[in-house]
Length: 102
Image (cartoon, rainbow, N blue to C red; front, top):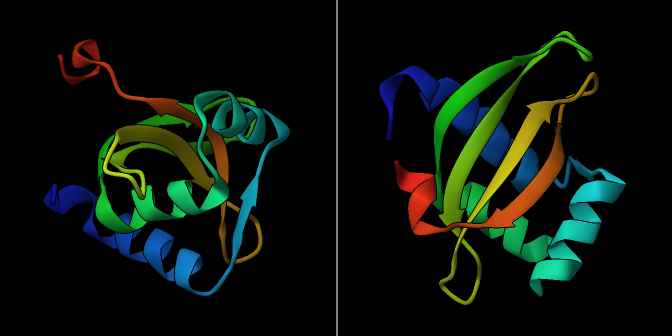
């Protein structure tokens, strides 16, 4: 685990376990297009690592890129941010390609 993101990842995992995860319409469409379900996004957060963050000017918040596993073992990634209520919002989900690791 990248030490600088330990606290954020712990909060995100707590949100998953407490059922405090919302999905954008875009993220739900991406899940369906890739053949995954919401449970795969949860699994990604629970098994994955935050690899980077980026400040979102529109939301005036930091969003986080997580690489982890879907339930079937596929490597997937997602981008999520913290919500105004204690929880997170999944913005998008994608299947990882070799180029994503560069």
